Amino acid sequence: MNDKSIILLGGPDSGKTNYVGRLWHSLDAKNCRLIAAEQPSEIGFVLDTAEHLFQGRFAPRSEHADDRRDFEVVVCSPDGSGRAAIVIPDISGELWQNAVASSEIASDWMDELIHGHGALLFVRVGSDLDVRPLDWVTSRSLLAKVGVEEDRGKLPTQVMLCELVRYLELTMANGQDGKKPKLSVIVAAWDRVDPGTFEQGPVAYLGREYPLLAGRLSDTKKLDVQVFGLSVVGGDLAVDPEFRDRFLEHGLDDHGWVAVYDTETGAWRKDVDLTLPIAWAIGA
Image (cartoon, rainbow, N blue to C red):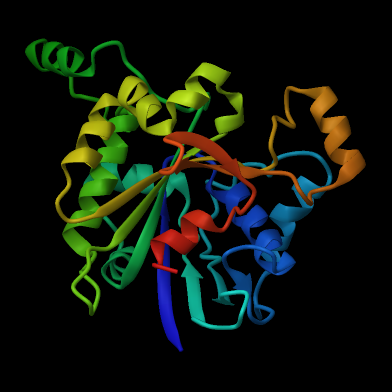
């Protein structure tokens, strides 16, 4: 059986934790592209995250956690073929942010990148922790002229994301078949965009809201990139009480979707299979 390590990257409050909790429920339901072939031995933190969702609220940030709580699960296709052990290292967004700001990355994280078979990069619509100076290039130049040291802890979110893409390019190796490693870019909280933005798709959204990142992704020659929109439960539990009431009445089943591009219709559509970004990243 092949071990396939999938790296989750992104800043604080980018949606990684809630996705992992929702992902396990999809795998265990056994009606998606990937299913759980056996029960994981260590799954406590994933169940804790899922429990928050079952209770009608998103999981709180765990960005200050120091302990590694990796999610390991054996998956396969619904017919039982293609068994693979998926390892998702739980590296917090704040730690990724600090690694970029200091230009230093821990050796164990570097090992995960080197041995990774694919990656998921998260950015969330409407995050309160999204850093967007009006003109970060000009601001940095002005600070240098007046002799004020730049605060790298306040790097714009898209600059940090570009650095994370660079880490992947420098570390992840091609597969045994010579194919480039795959990167699933996930625009989380995609349910918060208006219908027009949904129709344009998350690729166009990144081009408008994060042009540096969009340019970096389109220019990479070392990664195979696919962009998805994501809604872990299909609505906003925090600010939409009517949706929250409906959600609590019907439960987690049939809630949540991934926005994918349909090549036949040339349009973006919702797919209830939340395992698709993982399946694509491992080539399933």
